[in-house]
Image (cartoon, rainbow, N blue to C red; front, top):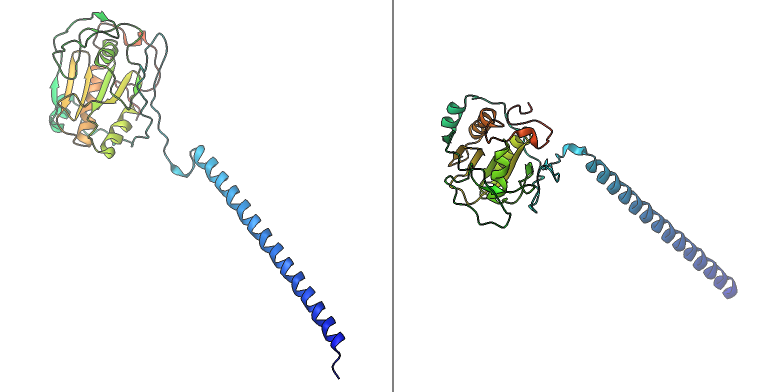
Length: 260
C-alpha cells in the first residue's frame, strides 16, 4: 500500500530544495555580472587616465599659440593642435641648393611695399606677391599671434606679423593629411615667432614667407621641401621688416635656431 502522505512530503521537500538552489544560482549569477561590470568600469577609467597623461605612446599636439593683448591676436581663427610627425635631419642646409632641390621658387629682398597701418575692416590691399610679403597691414593689436592655425588668417593680419620678423609657413588644404602633419612636425621644431596655416588662395602647394622674402613650392617634395623651409627660416627669420622680432615676446625654438 502506497504511503501517499510520505510521497507528497518528499515531493514538497524536493521542490523547496530545488527552488532554494535556483535562488542561490540566480544570486551568484547576479554577483558575477556585477563584478564583471565593475571590472570593466575600472579598466575603462584606468585606460582613460593612462591616455590622458600621454600613455600608450599616443602623441599629443600643440598649436603653440602665443596670445597677449600686446603681442597679437588669434582674430577668431581656430588652432591647429594636431600632433605633427618628427622631421628627418636636414640633408641640405644651403638655402639656394635646398630650394633648387625641392623645385621651389626663391625670391629674396623683394621691393618693400610699405608699412602703413590700416583698420581691421579695411579692404585688402593689392599686394604684389602671393602670398604677400610686405605692404599695408592691420593696426595693433590685431597682428596675427604666433601659432599654428586650422584656418586661413586675413592677409593684413599676417603681413603685420611678418613686419616683426616672423616667418609664415603656408600650405594648400588639398595637401594630403600625412604631408600636412609633416609640415606641422617641422613647425613644432621652430614655433617661436612663427606661424603655420592653410592657404588656398596662393599658386603654390607649400610656401614660406618673411618680410620681402618668398619661398614658393609648386609641389610638396617631402624631406626636400622641409629642408628648403628650414634653410629659408635660418636665412631670413628676424632679419627683415624694420620692426624688432623681440618687440612681441615669445618662447621656444625659432626658425633661426630650431630644435634638434
